[in-house]
Image (cartoon, rainbow, N blue to C red):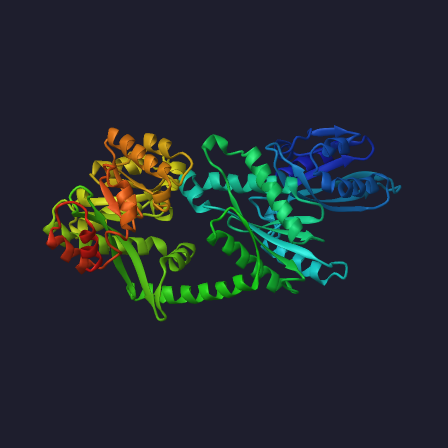
Amino acid sequence: MKEFLETLYQALAESTDDFIYMNDCQTGVFQYPGALTKLFALPKESRNAPLSDWKKIVHPDDWERFYHSHMEIMQDLREELLVEFRAKNRKGEYVWLKSRGKVLRDRDGNQMLFTGTISLMGRQSKVDPLTQLFNHAEFYMKLKQDLQSEKMTRMAVLMVDVDEFRQINEMYGRAFGDGVLKELGQLLQSVLPKHASLFRLEKDRMGILMADAGRADARIFYSQFQEYLAKINPWKQYCLDIELSAGCAVYPADGSCAEELYRYTDCALQTAKEQGKNRLVFFTEDIFRKKERSLQLLRELKECVKQQYKGFYLHYQPQICPKTGELKGAEALMRWKSREGVISPAKFIPVMEEHGLIYEAGLWLFRMAVRDGKEWIKIKPDFTVSVNVSVLQFSEELFLKDLYQIIEEENFPCENLIIELTESLAFKQVEVFQKKFQDMKKRNIRIALDDFGTGYCSLSVLKNMPVDIVKIDKSFVKDIRHNQFDVALIGLVTEICHAASIGVCLEGVEEEEEYECIKEIPLDFIQGYYFGKPMGKNAISRNLRKKVRGGVKSQTAKILNAA
């Protein structure tokens, strides 16, 4: 009989995805299948003390439930077992398991066998298989149930989202991105306050329900986790600093039902993204009104995009050579006129980025810019056209292919093209993008480093990135009339760049007094309202034909601004 049971157990264990266990109640020996012992640090056989093996891996919060349910079986107080719990696998990750078991008795009614199955709950609909957290449906269900409880007097609902997660996937691969989410889930679980639950909602977004908590509690938790994440940083070897944005709505102050709280928390999270990311934002009525406005903008933007970018047009910011006063180049800027009038790029571009419209729109802008630029090159062969490229565009695998295709179709000379990248993008991802940089250099496309001086390691970027032009950020010009440090810094950066054969453009020069402060610095380009506000294609053409020479004077500014 015993030999038959052993054979039967082996056959069953090898024929199912679940883990089948068996306990001989007479000898006290527990048997587990090899697949289970590979996944968890458990012996294949355990005699008399299986609970001591499980105590090492069961999550502390689940141990009491796990222990008592099994003790009732061992003390012959119940016939069947059903318990859900988390256990740590050999990778150190907690996964959700469900154990079902039943006692089999002999003819005399004595316990003979206790056998059952252990299932990975990730295979079921309520657990996310990647992170082993309860999923979106469970989050919403628990939120509704908690709100219906008479004991629930207040609650904080949070959503957290990994900043720039799409770029992480693009740069390091989806497998790495999945690993980030799994690790992040584990870290969040380890610091959750009492009476709080964590869920994976969708993509890189996670939800937290904090019972008996308000705004202050949510703020403390977010702050503590930010400090913990910075201290631990499991991704330091990849030079990657994971940052989280978060939104929060509280019951009953912000909403009384699950639908309201969910929607308001989502609004707060999106606002955190729009305000610069890596921050916690609490819901307000003003946020909701702005969200409604954003949705209205999105609807109209999509409509205009479908109509071949109806209402979109380009303006160009002149770039002046300070030695000769000539118009040497122009930076392309996207503009959009909606039904209500001209909308600031600061309002419509973030909406396009959030909803996946910016890549194609960026290609449209690029095509229009080089098409306009061909006319200017006929007038002035060394004229340059600068185009800003966002991290979302540059991270796309097909970006260079699409870029080169437009250049070929429009027959535009690569040596007259400048691609502008932000300093923050270049610093964080210079190694990842090296192949793209080298490919562009081979085609004589110049690379400009925009917003220089706003990052953390500006000189390090210059050392490691194949930059042709540095654009010093306008923040260094703002108080230049009263701050000699900024003047000295601009001069120093210019000297260093020239020593490395890198050109320098100063942005944001808006007044004659500002120009007077820097006119002795041997800059290669100056850009700002003092020399010309953004203007249309025809205005650039007219200024090129005037061939302004003889140095930069106030009359140069008047000519350009009057165009």
